[in-house]
Amino acid sequence: MRLRRPLTVRARILAAVLLLSTLALVAAGGTAWYLQRRIVDQTMEETLRRTVTELRTLARTGVDPDTGERFSDSDRLLYTMMSREVPATNEGMVAFLQDNLRYQTRDIGVPLAQDPELVHAVSDAWQYDTVVISHLETAQREYLYAAVPVQVGDSTPGSIVLAFDRGAEQADLAATFRTYAVVAAASLALLAVAAWMISGRLLRPLRILRATADQISDTDLSRRIPVAGRDDLSDLARTFNDMLERLETAFRSQRQLLDDAGHELRTPITIVRGHLELMDPADEQDATETRELALRELDRMHRLADDLVLLAKSEAPDFVRTEPTQIGPLLDNILDHARQLGDRQWRVTERVEAVVAVDRQRVAQAMFQLAANAVKFSDDGSTIHLGAGLHDDEVALWVQDEGIGIDPDAQNRIFDRFAQVTGPRGRPAGGSGLGLSIVAAIAAAHGGRVTVDSEPGQGSRFTLLLPAPGVHRDMTDDEIIVDPDELAVGQADQDGAR
Image (tube, rainbow, N blue to C red; front, side, top):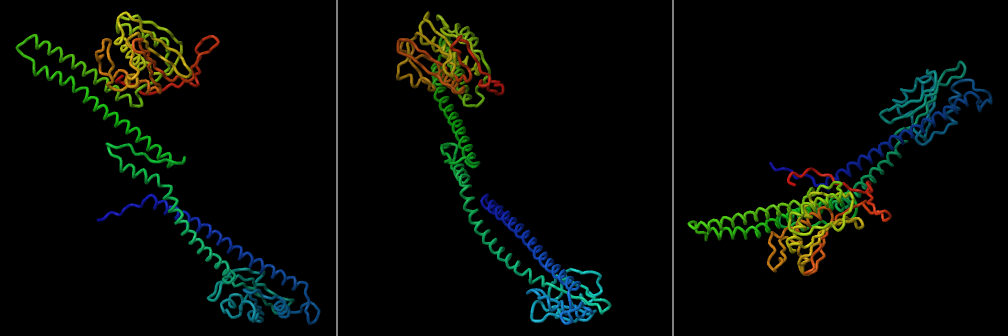
């Protein structure tokens, strides 16, 4: 069995628009049709009542035109009534003397006397106690009529009947609504064309989104959807582009992690394999040295793997979990632990008492890395300065050494992964080359940055600049003032791997 292809969104939109428009036009036309028919019926009924009032006035105050006296019998009154009332185009009149048809209009109006069903239905109107206004439908017509009983003194009673051809009166209205139906159908056709074109224009971002999604592969996430406007579909396109940006960043990070891991792990593996292949198992000293070398390389691989995993996690939104942190005590804690890194003169050149929203563990990790680098590239007994201060809307934490410094050309790449600089004696400094990359990742995760100010032979100063909104220094009494309304405190779940 062949499955039917579902309707497209564009077709469903068009169907919905046409259905709702058709219902609206039918409801509006039907309501107008009903109200207009009521108005026509009311107009006919008012005309009949007005005519009845005139006939009653004639019967009560009128005189016989032949005698100049009051009417003496019913027949004469009926004759005078018939002669004085001129029926409208779709109106007719008949008069009865008891059950017998006595007078009728000729050559004008509706020939009521020629409709036997009507004549039979109203011939006994002389017996009514009052005027009757009602509807009657016969094989020939549909009538709205008024039957008026007439009797003068003790003369023979009679009646006069005035009737409208209701169908004829409604004919003009029916023609008008037939025209309305044609106009409504033409309007629906035009609406269908306009809705098809407009829906196509509105859904164009969705078609581009689908085409973009079809062209995306696991190796190419660079395509983006052009966005214009501020409507819901534009917001959807922006959200899709943001998703592609995150996916591209995640995939790029994964590829870089695999490339870096493959590149860096290959060297210790090659070293260990080469020494194992050349090792003499019978030579105890050779076996011991090879074992120690293998353990060192394995430790190096372990540290490298930890650093790579940390860098990969730095792309996650919960890499840092900020909380209000006192910068002064944090700097003191960093200094206490940094003293264990090497035989240096450790000094705090500036200390600030402020509360800033940061991830204290990640900031301490970055500062320890900078302190370790300062030890690595300086001589024993030299001075290493630590400090913290507020500048504009940023808190600055720095580490400054008196080491070998960094060449200007190298300063542009030291934060790249696996970038290496020369050690104190021109030899490679060792390490994985990921330390400063980790520092830069921690700063970026806070929305900040890390800078370096260095001259060869004069030492280096690395500064961690982190956002500190709402925190500023009062220039009058040099006191730190914190505006709690502007202090942004991030909330995140606990990171068990931290």
